[in-house]
Length: 434
Image 1 (cartoon, rainbow, N blue to C red):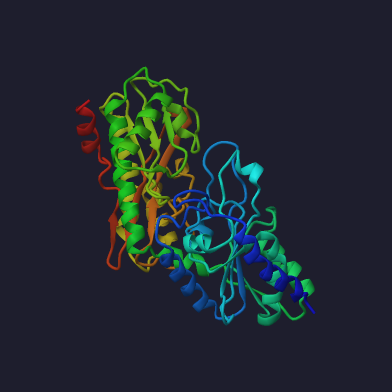
Image 2 (tube, helix red, strand yellow):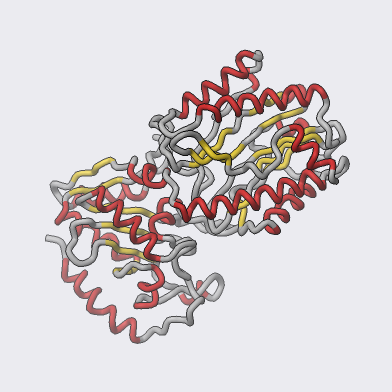
């Protein structure tokens, strides 16, 4: 028999503890609330998920690591279900068949000494419940006690993913489930790792609105870079101009670390340098995008430092553009990702350049720049994906990638990044205004 006396004692002790703590004024302390939408949006998402699960319990862990530098980035699934983006170490538990409380939020215990250095955190109580929209908020040490109690009644443990490689650490939810199964006979683990990707693939109108704002801010930054580039600048100087343009255009963050690569550096797919000097004959590849209220964009443009494409640069560039167009022409609801990839590769194969394109054609985008989605199932209407073919030739001192963001519709697609100059004529006209 599980020790319910401990659970009961913890519940009875809570009111006395709350009376001794005073919540800070509105707008102070973490979690500050749900972001970027109101708590009822996230409550509806959890309800939809629990309606699909029907029984058992499901545990979703938030990110626990706080980087030494840069902002804390919440786990995408946890953020999509809770809207809590500023609380490391949080855990969500959903129990669809429980009578009174069907969702539980576990937060790390407070440490007043640590809070002097980092951020003040809310005590348990009504303010925390109101900000999060979750009625049952507890401290993290209670998870190991409550989860077996819920499992004893429901017997099913739902794993929501993601599936990790054999070399990766065991996901914390599976680690917890293993401990529960060893202590609660008759429990079973069910693989439901496809549920959250399916829910997150189709973007809500409110999500699309933020992504369109991110695309507009991204266009502002790319145009600023095209118009500011001069031979003799460094990649870092151009990167600073680019990211300032994102902010001016309404961006509230970066979707990922910006890549600004000149000449030969552009042939390295994940180049991260800043010191390369731009010369007049270089092609410059910029893979960078703004985010707005945690929703991402993803765009890559390649353009000549001189402002005019040479004949060879134009031929190579328009080959990449043709490959993108071939894939985009096929993109609509119900198509398979591999059919898009085949269409793009066929263009390079016919041109005898297939060996110069050696990465995937694209990915889903949303709350995360690499959003969850199943490439082996038909792409649904409402999904947002990138199409990003490229040619990479280190011996030729160039890399060319063209990446755009597409909203999938029932009959075709909408290019969300259309405001960022893409054709040779558009790029040269933009750069002529320097």
